[in-house]
View 1 (cartoon, rainbow, N blue to C red):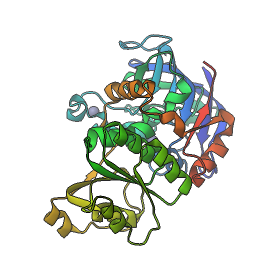
View 2 (tube, rainbow, N blue to C red):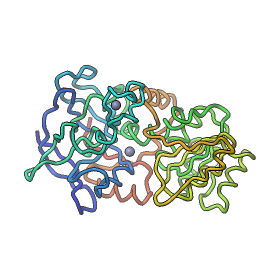
View 3 (cartoon, rainbow, N blue to C red):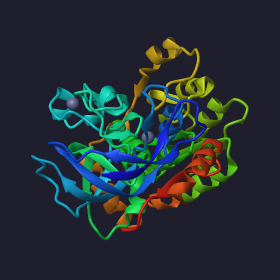
View 4 (cartoon, rainbow, N blue to C red):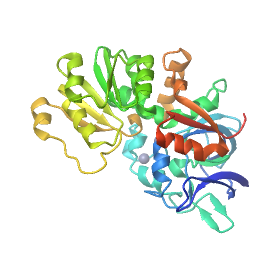
Length: 365
Ligand SMILES: [Zn+2]
Ligand SMILES: [Zn+2]
């Protein structure tokens, strides 16, 4: 059927809205009418064609309504409201252990731009357009998604609020709750308080962390972090930042959570740790960087990569929604709404950091 989608072509400064032809869902897939989709930094990074082939429809924070189900889909019916999260195979050891973000096939399923059999769901008059980005390609009025990509949600929660849960919010909140397992009384510093970092701050408050230190260059973001649960805010350009963080507890923090790619911040994330502390990170340092190994040895400290918050979206997202209903996890505070045809402006605002979480409203409910 004919759909409208935002296509990333080589050389284009931003995705361009176009009419495309979309296949019907194959076995195990569903067609989801997208109501809203968040923009994540991974979309910005992939738009120029970094890991994924082009032309491609990006978008991996979709939320919408199931419109058609393919053969063999058991868990969903037409009319269900769904959040789309990552894609995974469902049968590898990581998937069986409930850790789908570490699926053996995560890279081809997320960035391959096609199904594992090499087919894509989209085409234009000139040929195939790559699809299935994170199992979604949800910068579109409709997405063909594998059943495992979707999480069913209650119909009374607005889908335009739920869109960012599938990547940015689960990445930050999952890191604190599932990966680092921060507990009441613990101390954590969050380095970089954008959408992922602020989700981590809210989660740290949720679990009762005693010290939640927010670090950023952006003063407005530090103020929002304080509103959302940070107990201390430190400007990232503070001289001897690691020492300033260590001074909050007098002996360093038990956890650091680094959302940045800045090599110097990765260094701070280790230097600010107390004995037996863990430095979690969600993005690799850009450029050359090597950790100082002796302090890691002498302090029993760890460096821990975290993808998708280590979380299983099927169980974790309904829990976050329950906390949101209780007023304890106000992730909607992060959202700035845009219309679908404002995608270019939303990309630029996201890149410039003037908004935290842009969400495109694609269709009415
Ligand atoms: Zn993302
Ligand atoms: Zn798997």
